[in-house]
Length: 160
Image 1 (cartoon, one colour):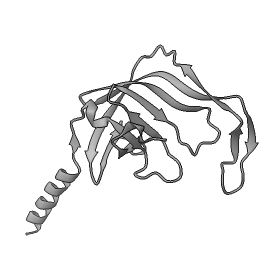
Image 2 (spheres, one colour):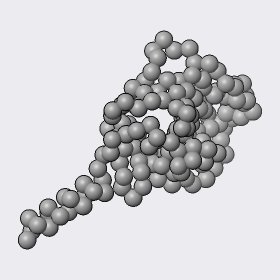
Image 3 (cartoon, rainbow, N blue to C red):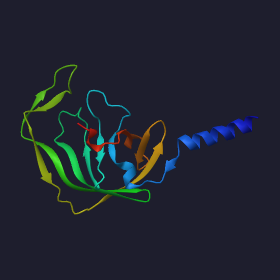
Image 4 (spheres, rainbow, N blue to C red):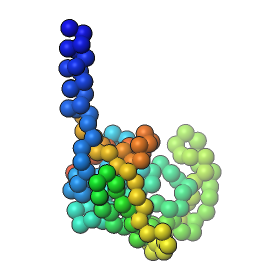
């Protein structure tokens, strides 16, 4: 009886938590590195149907200068290829002490956003990818638990 129960649990786990072959269309949408979005986004991807993507650094980061990366993506087998074309950077401004309890220790204030062309001699960045279906779709990059992303919406324009 115990063997039957373990066998049944194994099949259930495989059904609800197995890696799926990844197609480009599977990634279209907005993905966040936490399963929910509170008052701001953590690291987030937007994958568009035309093969372009945007990656946004955490909105909780009040000091970092690079805010977003934009470029093209493609999937081949279990590998996601990302090619960065531009980045959005915070330019100028000045550093202040953050407000206690509401901000980081240091913040960058009065900066402006500027798009900068990416001039990289390295071309594409390749990441192994596993697409899983648990209670919602998620994917894992390079088998790192801190690089797990959850589909927040199938609309890539959902990110704001």
